[in-house]
Length: 404
Image 1 (tube, rainbow, N blue to C red):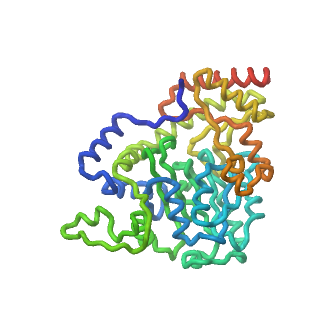
Image 2: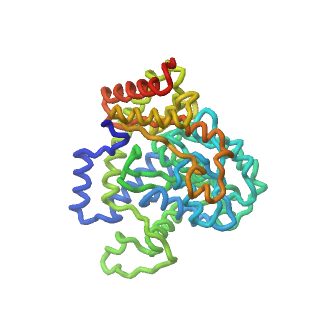
Image 3: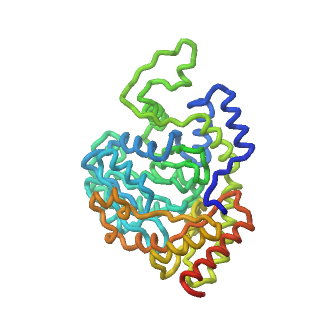
């Protein structure tokens, strides 16, 4: 069986993790701090805080920003449940919007129709690693600035809706020649096991707020917030006699460990070769599928945008959801693992029970019902890529008939 997305664990990773274990620092320590600095340098961000997951990072961020009951956060309906879960955790309301025809990202016109005085944050999702239209988003929030009603000091300082990017898929992607992580006001990455860059579990928040925001102070605040509100982290407490600390607020526990950062440092150091290999696999899939009328291949490069090549989201033209499911089953029977990214949120019980309706988001449903994500990862060899291609073509033709 060709797996869908195994992590790249080789001797270099094992050696660095072993070195971390032998160092005596297995929780947040020097490797985590180094990883944060290297992420800032890679992305061009003003500062970075490493966290235990995308989810904990985004929730702490929303709470710090003052998001709570009565507020609204606009997110695309086509995303993983974490994007909406964190909004609900704060007591705010997730406002879902439909996606574009050509790609899987949120529709700017749909966002424009949903902005109110309650909107505090827009959370664009770079689905599959392909960046959203950030220029249009910033133009839109400038146009709607007169509606903005701040309810925290940070919101008042910004004076407009915050763009907090869900870049769980897009580490290494770029927009107008700037890497994701330095495009939105604030960006949250995921380093979960299936992501391009993994730390097993983990994530990072990069900050790129306008002039006037003190990014050094923000970094210190987040260090405190993600470790129970302690005034010192474990590293600071190791100084001679420096055992005493205070708890400044009842904080959270979502710091990254040095064991995780050890994996991340190796991954980041060789990240370009990972992206290069993924690009080759995308090109091979395009070459194979573009001649077929049934294949809608994903957009992953434009003049403005460069994907991180995280997901190859193939769509089957004029396919029903049942046919797509049958194709997937047939591909699996040919010993190739594929996936679907994602079920739009109103299809899930938790969101359906909150009153969200799939019929309100026709584009998202059409994209979902025809989508199959194909394997893309560094260790996927050329022969395996050809095996995937043959399995997909044979399965589509078996289920849909001989369409060319």
